[in-house]
Amino acid sequence: MTKNICVVGLGYIGLPTAVMFANSGVRVHGVDINEKAVNMIANKQLHIEENGLQERLEQAIDEGMFTVSTAPTEAEVYIVAVPSPINPDNTANLEYIRQATASIVPYLQKGALVILESTVPPKTVENVMLPELRKSNLVLGEELFVSHSPERVIPGKIFEELINNDRIVGGITPKSAEMTKELYKTFVQGEIHLTDATTAELVKVMENTYRDVNIAFANELAKIAETIDVDIWEAIRFANFHPRVNIHTPGPGVGGHCIAVDPWFLVELSPDKADIIKKSRLTNDGMPKFTAQKAKMLLEEQGIENGKVAILGLAFKGNVDDMRESPSTEVIKELENIGLTVTSFDPHIKEMQHPTQKESLGQAVQDVDLIILTTDHNEFKNINPEMLNTGDTKPLVLDTKNALNRDKWERAGFRFFKLGDGKHKGNSSI
Image: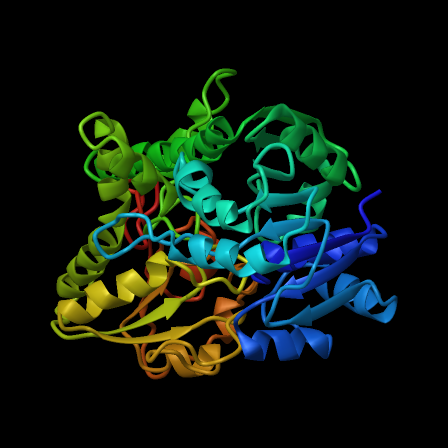
């Protein structure tokens, strides 16, 4: 059994992976360049939110199986789990991958295994990591083994999915893949499928791109539904009763570090062939503006020119604290661009991370003309609109996630609207 692992990158994937191994009897050293995050982790405090992480972290540290610092150490296995964002021009920024790989080179010993977990464009292992690893003077595939095993988990259910989901492992050689499989068998109960590194890279990007294209389809359907007196959420639910149909749901945009980013890897790789992929990305990136324009139209119908809007939710998805690529922040930009004043609230974003952010729901909705729900946190689903104090008048409500109970809000006197719903307009009934 592997005796020790060094995990480089202690974010939303690296930290849960590190403590998962530590809880499974493997000694783990975690590394991150963020000194504040390292100090917090060392003191058993979390800088990210994830179900079950606090208890697992405490166990790992208390049992002496997990240490952290800002520098790597010698280990049998190195796992790289750093960000791979996109640049403003939608090209891949792989500098974090290169720097993380370079940082471990001085510590590499004969027989070491290096695993990239970050989601990356195909050929990243070959073109970015291997040139750095060759500087170790170890023979690749004989003295130094390298593979790509992309994470396939969803925030909020990371530990459950780390254990139960199938894994893809792509090695630069068959032995690299086999060594990686043996490592992850420490805790993975799903099947582990072996291939080459470039195929594994493509598979992960394909998975997220499939979802992005499907969401773009749903968003186009939502726009159409608003013109033909149909509630698209109802129509999608009925369509999905078909055994071979699985239409995703529309929304104010696509966020997160994966679905909103990974398709651009394929566009950059082959711009003249990725027509549907690029169109889907542009469609989903256009939803914040569509949402803002809908808000403006609703306000103008009430004779309100320069209104005040409250945004409920800054995280990119419900019940997490992750704001990466969040469509909520883009919706706010678009609202402000058309002259509207915006406040926001998110119960999962503990520190003030956005200039519009308020400390409480009550502060955010006070004296606003329109409330827009952009993130489907349980706290928002459970709001009692009868008890919601919004000031002298009740604002309009626009639900972009199909998360609120229309009847409850209308009984409380709010005019209720929903993205993609041309069937119910305000307080009208079918």
